Image 1 (tube, rainbow, N blue to C red):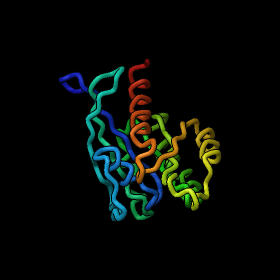
Image 2: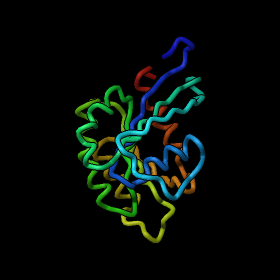
Image 3: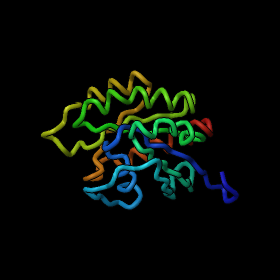
Length: 176
């Protein structure tokens, strides 16, 4: 909490390259979508001020981590101080869900039992979906996470996902 009584939180977005992490962040922060983001090299750091009904002003620092294997060595550093993680997979590519076990392991090693939420992104691509929501829900249950199906392109459930993770952080840290 800062001197004005605002909560400051750090959320990290985790997942393989090209699952839509950057698109989710920009949809949430600017309510915009672009078809052609370049792959994140290292980390993007963005901020969003929110007013959460039960808590008041919250300043979210959102760390969008590059998904390439070459950045794996930097994960521990980026995860430092994270209050929660959003694990993102592309529901048109099964291997992006399968690879999340590694991300979860890295997160739990660095952050213990901080909250995680599983995001199945690109749910607007109906004819290309390879991972049904049920599979996402089952994966989330295995790790005691909530599952949210989103589309950065249409904006479906994006804001709700960020608000849910923010409330999880505040509930946990304030023991409500």
